[in-house]
Amino acid sequence: MTASPTTRLVASSVTARLDRTEGTTDGPAGLIGLLPAPTGSICFVRGDRGFVGWGVHARFTATGPDAAARIQEWFAQVQAGLTVTDPIAEAGTGPLAFVSLGFDDTDVAVAVVPQVVVGRTAHGTFVTRIGPAGESAPDAGLPVPAPIRGPGRIRYTDDGSVAGFTQAVTAATDRIRRGELDKVVLAHDLVATAARTVDERLLLARLAADYPGCWTFDVQGLVGASPELLIRRQGRHIASRVLAGTAWPGHADAAVAAELMRSPKDVAEHAYAVRSVSEVLAPACDHLDVPDRPTPLELANLTHLSTDITGRLGEIAPTALELAARLHPTAAVGGSPTPVARQVIRELEPMNRGRYAAPVGWIDGRGDGEFAIALRCAQVDGRTVRLLAGCGIVADSDPETEAREAQIKMVPIRHALESTR
Image 1 (cartoon, helix red, strand yellow):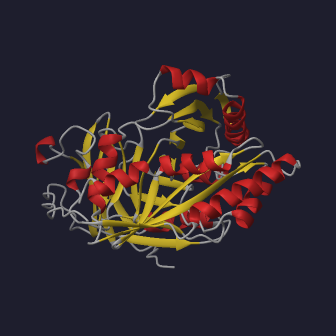
Image 2 (cartoon, helix red, strand yellow):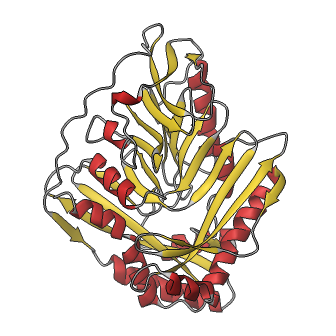
Image 3 (cartoon, helix red, strand yellow):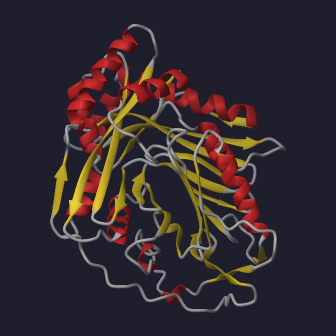
């Protein structure tokens, strides 16, 4: 565990508006283009809005069922050690913690407070800098990004993960048919090795350009573009986008979407996921709006069933991180009932997930924030890139079809890697 919590005022956090002429161009990769170094990036961007950051003011790691609560406490201590100047005072201004939780209790959760964060919202672009007290200059220029170099030749190693995955699906469907559980989400990985160290900025820029409707993220080398918003909190207003049920024949079009909406297997899988989210959010809300039917969400290579849930928190409003921890894992990434599904994953899945399929996002000092589910992602470590993908398994799931779906879900990262040789 590494951290720098303190109650002494040893540093200052200064937020100021940023002149758009400083290189913050419009478009999906505008913010990502500001990242100065090949590794160590912080990113949470959707379209032309979101945040990028670099440098480390404080970092913290934790494991266990209380990891999120410990991160929340740590962030409060970090804030107590700062003098904060924030004339904008909007969601996302001031010091931010970027958090990537572990999927299981034994997986390591990571939180980082960057030294510099550039953000863009509907109200404009701003920069927050953290440095020694009295030395954070709000008008300091942004660094010139280092040149980007491609990773060179990419080599993939399966090591039997697909075979292990199909065996796990067969075992899971047997257990579901015996009535042990309703649904479980199983995943597998694929390891890519590059000729040179992978520049995370290349992956981020390609993912943001190809999937502008997704949340493109990078926290401690976990890079991806997730279509699924676990929770957004702004004041007492919350939103969540639930995805479950997938189709991919040919391409995303009206016929594919209509077939997906008529699929009993996919509609049932989606219903489990919606119920798992609404049952957690309802007790915290004065009002919760859960649509009766899903709608198709078309991405570049897949179509999902989607339900957008919105609500208003009660007077005692949990932070965005607290809500993310309560929601995790939803039935969309774990299964139903949750305790049984988590145990089946531990028994059948031929790998450790790490931070895959867990909440990833940001939180500010007001408790506002956004967390996506870490999907369509990979862990980047030098020349090694570990891709991960999974599928919801129900009683009539076909192992070969599920394996094919998982491979298709790896396409965004593979294309990003392969396009940058």
